[in-house]
Image 1: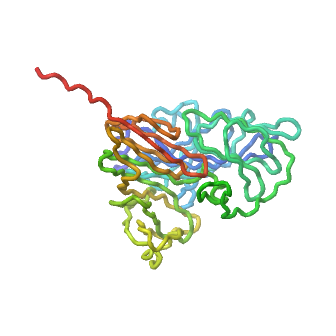
Image 2 (image 1 turned 30 degrees about the vertical axis):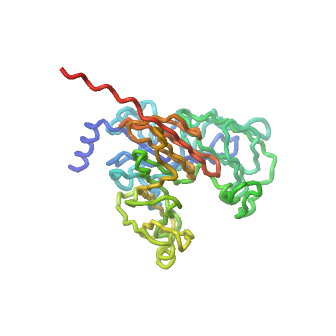
Image 3 (image 1 turned 90 degrees about the vertical axis):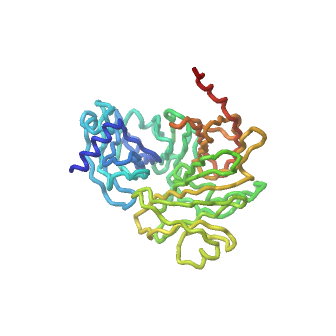
Length: 418
């Protein structure tokens, strides 16, 4: 109890608020005359030391059938519905809206420093304003979405006839049609989805490893091209060192949920040299040992990475405890790359030229540099230390070839000496 009280005092004195990351929502629309839809919401608590997570219940919606799971173990978590006034008693929620109710989730473990607490919230909403029938055979789902990654599954027998947000159109295993999208910009995504009931739900054919006959290069397979981009859980951040070094630190996060997997293999890209590998389990903060191996050594080992490697590859391998059915772990793999072909100095210009293959990528410029060119559209933010960060969210199945250029800022004048 003393430790918990000390933590609350520390959080309050630091004026820390609840933070989260990696939000993803799946909406399953029920029959339109019910105005109801099931919600599957993945979210990650990221405030170090937090023991609870608060999920607001949207105004105008009536929630039911709530339950919460710990994403790592798959086990249920305790929760209760509290008022905004009650939520404000938690130092992390001092600014909570008193007119809003919240689902207060007791996390499976306090969020570790530099780690995460992943949870899954399931609930059913009834909201006539957002979702209703449209004529005899139609429906409208009109709901601005603040979460950046979303999927909406139509009821059986409906096809999309109107859609305001550019989205993938996908088909569930049971034949229901769905739309999925990434929203990289700020603010809410103004989704209006219209559909009519005029089709026979048909399970899709198995996706294949065929590749586009039009691609001038070896493109992605059909299965890869038609996978849901918004729900892919890999993201990567590059921290550029001064360009004269040709080096950048990076970390990439991903969730392993395949039963039987007990290791991660990262093949070093040709033209790059990897050093200082490290890894951790974000759920617990546990540090893992990274090993550099040849592809042949990986093949000969008993480490099941679930990937095929070439015997001649250089591979960074991170073993971990075998994943069991219904469980998952979130890994962070960090290393330093030296890649003269991708990164360096051209005259007085910084040049970063690299193909980025993840749906979510970010590049942080070195201190003292500002961006002058970016070939791929990006959102831009300023880090607490003043560094410029560019986020590249790629909603297409192919990699994006990012070409960045930057220059040094003019140094601030030094104060004159008396």
